Image (cartoon, rainbow, N blue to C red; front, top):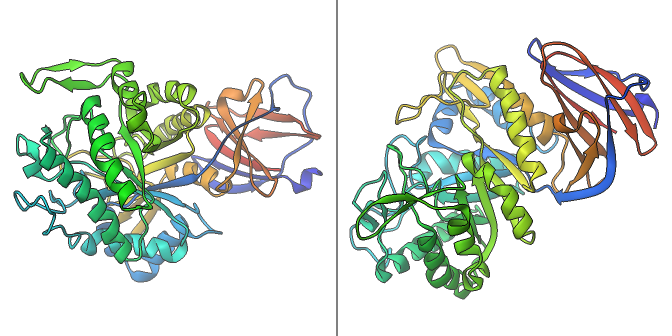
Length: 447
């Protein structure tokens, strides 16, 4: 392969997405090489469909909105996102609290409805599907309906464990998948609870490992199997290795070890037989390696990028590179960003400012592509679904990731995380080249 056939795209704070030319390999010990070993296959990259995102998109001209959607989802252009999340009921980026059934005591789910989703989520998802018909979608609730909880609140609380409630909640998931099917949208995965260890002022619910085990083993799993549901059941989205546990009699909160939570579920063969994968986010990054080592047959995904503070800084983008590398090195098959689109400041309905890939200023009609947009694009534009992660060695190992696409292309993503230029050299597999990486830059090489 000649140097002219190697494509190099770089993004630095003062210049985004530039084509560059590599040079002959330097005589340096600071190299990266492939070991010849292969890791997991990559399912893809994406973000979450949230109500405030669609509202932001709705406030710009149709042509500008189409450009944003194209830059996120078009299968040849932009980020090429193919693996995305949506909420079941309200999350912190909904306009306000809602669930798909707030009718007290409706155990038969006769009043179940996704009418609210038809206002904000379904239009967003359907526009994405126009660009990416093969979109993999997974869904999770931030809270069950309030009448299913003790106490009856949309934040905090816990699921009531009476059999009639558990049976109804399993039916709730089935109804959601079927309702979306009727809209022409396939939900491929159901994750039982967003962040089951988080007591938040926005929609949330605490779950113990025992609750997960019983609900999946005795209710959701058998129902999905009986109904031949196409959606997979996933153990997610887990946000910590040492979760809180609530004593059902006293209400006291204690900490559980990782063994007492994740293993409590996965070591039950009757529960595990229904579980196709595990989703981790936030402090779950400290547990993913152990799951990958112990249960290599299960798929793993990173389910929600850490959110930042609404400043959308280059410093935070560099932190996110390390997050992506950590999850993928430890076996994750997919990496999912959080809010793809928000208005300036990115403040949630419950008052938390967070980052987004794209900022839309409705007053000026300005569309701003933030640093994390380009970081995600450095992976998602080049790493195709089905790519294999390749193991590497050398001084650049901790600042890079390597993949082989199904067509045989080798993709290297390299981060120069310091304030000065450095020479990156790749040697191996009958290929060798060098590149002078700009300060604080993300770089993708396609061989």
